[in-house]
Length: 386
Image 1 (cartoon, rainbow, N blue to C red):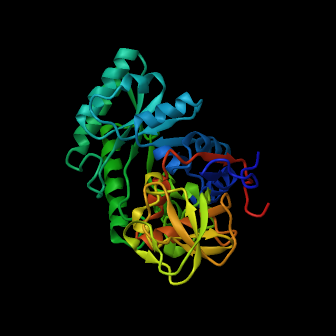
Image 2 (tube, rainbow, N blue to C red; image 1 turned 45 degrees about the vertical axis):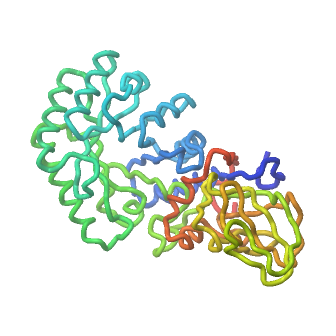
Image 3 (tube, rainbow, N blue to C red; image 1 turned 90 degrees about the horizontal axis):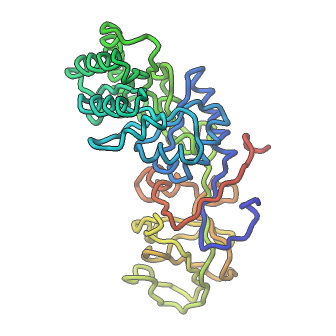
């Protein structure tokens, strides 16, 4: 069933075009110029539905997947995904036996992580592939330059016992979305130095070297190494908006049905606090989405939606479950569709428009869409206009 032409039977839904995802992977592969691709599907595929997104990415040429949490990786395994998956954000005491048994690759940046991964491998009799993370200047995850040699030595010793396999060496860029930032080149220098240390200590030259996120994939060729890790761009959202869309196609369209339509007189205060007051007799429409669904309260009187053929600004306070729009004298009925954001094909706002209005980034817009909003996936096509 094509969700794009079917009348909603729920108050709202997020329509996800998997053809757009495949198209985006193709665009990114062109930028990667032969580097392997790990599609990042953390946070339930940036709010798009991780299992469906993973399948589309793998069909389009990505060879690996990345998640932040082990639980996310295990959920993909339960969904039948068999491709290599890296989970990089583990904490002490997690059930790493499950990672070993389900062949989840793990990241390690400290001695405790190597110890716990090795212990899980010994208990299960299943060696774990490990990516060693080095901090090259983000000062977040990863071993510092001072601690890096000892981490590598420890990993090599455990590898010699057969408990782990050093599969990769990686880091993360802090300023890739500002391509001209001097930190980018400095981080590559630090990464190269860490790679040289690992090589001198005996790490195989066959390990996968990776540092490039979406922004680096499309703007920073030197950062591609053996593999790139596009996240945001996979979903068609530009990692460097001021440089355009890079040929990417937004995959998500967020829609709702009007829950109520009514005429009100001039001087009517709208929603909590009466932050919007009608200046004439007008028609109001009630949209059944609110901050419990990820529609930020700061969107009050700011963000726009497409309704009754025109863009309409949210009128008054965004509530937990609903917000109001002013339709003027245009005709509308309960049940009519409202598009909050999408690819812009019908004149609706794009996710980037919402991010700009709210002073945030598109990552936050799509990942906040809550579980009350069903994700409806359509096959779509791989290229715009086909």
